Length: 105
Image 1 (tube, rainbow, N blue to C red):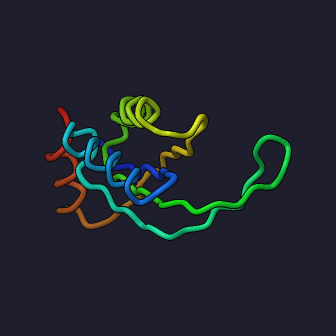
Image 2 (image 1 turned 90 degrees about the vertical axis):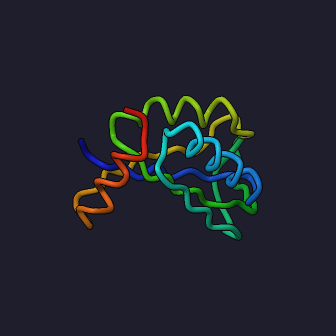
Image 3 (image 1 turned 60 degrees about the vertical axis):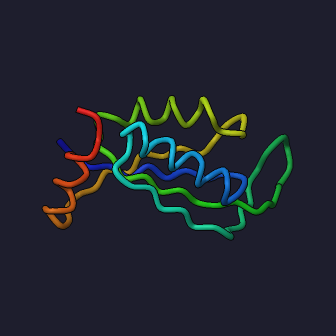
């Protein structure tokens, strides 16, 4: 079983915290890190937009990505939320085992 990071952007720190807490409580992620105070510059509705966001990084198993993505989409305020799965190539074996042990089986 491989570990995966799920990178998510949210419209506020509070939204990122809420989504992160929900996924950890539901054991779709072992851990959630919220990084507030980012600025996004992006194309939307035919023009360049800019806005404040928070980054949410979830640590989970690769086989939970689909369920986690569906759950994030069900509660996210954005019409088209950024949800990206980034496979973990390697790392602290104890930490990787902890991710497996703390997520849904």
